[in-house]
Length: 564
Image (cartoon, rainbow, N blue to C red; front, side):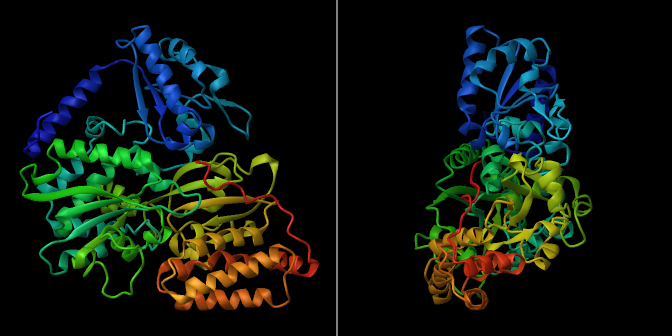
């Protein structure tokens, strides 16, 4: 495909692709190609469909498409038939023949492959009627499950890069920043800082060169939001970065993605090359005068590199360790130049905001927390997976209305939200709305979006120990409070869990946690004690019972938080 040299050329391509899609009346068999479904055999299932279509020469009668994560990871592999939206779950290779013959070519429904609503025990035919999907409001994930992440044409057909067109032709850089600020979008990586304000800082910073970094170093146990967006719709993030670069005056950008996400790294790499080949990256993009290019930097999996200054050090080839601030990255970041670092989900929100406007976006959510938020729902819940809901949705709604309730007919005990930096929220607070301020009041944080559900068999002391072990292991060791303090906390928690707890251990834990929060250098240490503090706050009796009983902890292993 030839490079596009103007806005008009991109518009013409989009119109042509839309006409071709409209003229193509073939049903489409869509197979989920996210990591979760591939783990259950999704890749082999897609190959089975491919072999059947080729063997029976059905290319003129049916289309095949492999998409990113469709969300319902617990039920994978997933297959959706478009345009009817007949939805099948837990599909096996041997089901490929019947799906092609009975559904794709004949329009019939295979009852055994349908989702069963656990509350009504009724079979559900269409994807949009499944409670897991029905209760969501998908903005970032709107096209996951519809487009092929390896096809830039697929993205352009659903109006991809139209927001970039609008920004370049109808808006000044200042107007773009004003639109993002007015939308109320806050950073989705955990800190919740105003995205527009951060962009303004970088735009106003003096410097002959400016950088933009997409932070895809998702390291929370149980979190797979950013990975799924990068796997399923990398072009949405690239478009967000192009708009951000135009607004701030950045000339070069980086995707910082952990190497443990091989599919995300591969799909982003292909998307970058496709975008460059089409003329949407490089010099004088679409004849607009915008110069911007991207490359990938793979992280080695250090949790601390999710912190901005540690991430910058890693890209520079140094050991990933935080530094004191100020100066902030917006003034002196990558190689001493003004640098903006945005999370994957934050950047994927940019195109729809530019397309539909700040007023539309700010009408979703709450007064202080606008838009939607993606959560990785994991733990002791029936339907684990990827969930996108409006800010202000309660924890209870996510667990029971979308997640289907607690697995194995047990009772809910708590929800851990915000990962290792978050807190455990007991069942009596499940009606807490998910927004930045409400979660802080109950001792948790939004974080990047991990949500782990625990049933009544889970030891909350054991969970506190689990997260403290993670924090201690991931501490970079630069500052004493985090390096030594978390080690001491882990030793005390281990002693309590082993039935060797002492009177005063809980008070010592609380004191250590408070000091670590007050004196640590970066966010890892400052928020690391949160799971311990929240479990002491709400489940103090479990600590006391273990200490007084002097019995080793007898509990199930905390539910796998990385199943997807």
